[in-house]
Amino acid sequence: MKPFLLLLLAATQASAVQIAVFRADVTPPVGAPLCGGLVKPAAGVSEPLLALGAVLLDTAEKPVVLCAVDYCEIRAADHLHWREVLAGAAGTSAERVALHSLHQHNAPLVDNAVQKLLPDLAILDASAADKALQNIASAIRASLASPQPVTHLTTGQAAVAEIASNRRVMVVNGKVGRMRGSSSKDPELRALPEGLVDPMLKSVGFWNAGRKLAVLHYYATHPMSYYNDGMVSHDFVGIARERRSREDGVPHLYFTGCGGNIGAGKYNDGSPENRPLLAERLHKAMIDSEKSASRRPLAGFSWKHVPVILKPDPEFPEERMIKVLQNSATSPSQRITAALRLGFIRHRKPIPFTSLHLGDDVRLLHLPGESFVEYQWFAQQQLPGGFVCTASYGDGVTGYIPLEKSFTEGGYEPSQAYAAPDSEKAIKEAVTQLLKP
Image (cartoon, rainbow, N blue to C red):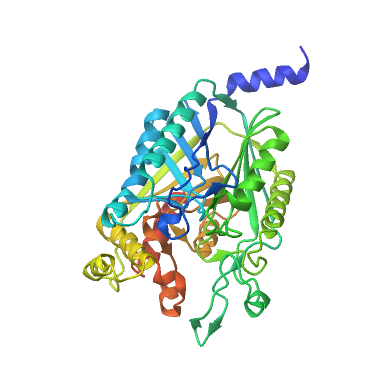
């Protein structure tokens, strides 16, 4: 037998870690509400929406599920229900499921409790969402029929050129003014500096000796080039991801990082031709990140789970939100926004913060909501010399998660943040705990 084949056989026999990768179609039907009814409903499909994920297995650990869905948000009781269903399919518990939306806007938002608050408005297609969930569970069960041994891990990163820019860069006398968002046609806003971003796309690869099995990519920005045209789309992040998967025949998964205050607005005017340009830039970073990767054996993994209760923002009391959503003279978008906030106020359950430890120095951190990029930088600072990848947009029930000082600065995001301003301390304490050995 050839030396390489002997090495491959020995590594496979010694490996305790296995991976099962799954893929499911979650595309909504024509007519389905998108973005919780805040944009035009589905009129057609530009690209199919997918749920991509991996189940990690270890003789010393219960299975862990990592799942990234081309949805706008999955929230509150529905986020818990989805994790329970995926956990059942994988033979594990709900707290060991990291379920994340990518947050494209021409995509569904799942929150049945909010739909019940607004029976006269279309928030979601419940039957389509349930079908999507069952598709994912079926894909998980099918993948577990043929898990692959994992002997090695690779980690790499590369700078992404001309995508991410901070949305809160117009500051006058300590107050945030107009923002450029995911796109902007305002030359003054586009001429402003990028502001604080995390320019690095990070990649984690799972290998069986010399054979690549799957790659996870992480990057912090809102993932929209343009939307509100009724065309269901996984947008530029999905285009780049699918291109990488086709190129090497290996599943590539993408997780949106802490992009709550990050968008492509400096480099994107919202023209349709910009979508493939943004996808090309992200795709290049994916390739460069893998080229830079270092390799190390993987003997096992561990999982941490910290449940966190965040208090509602007292500036938006429940009684006032009820009045807004019940007022038929109020615009649908204001009523929907009030209902989403009320959903957070009434949820009153711990929000899952979790992390996957791969060896001594690699951490995959999972956060809820639209977390600001500063939380991603904070996480990386807690593990000097380590490799920390952060996925945000877990349970979307929180809305935006700014810093405490952001509420004094004003701007759009704090007005759509459902948790109290002092939540920053609790979040950072949870992150620190999750990243410890």
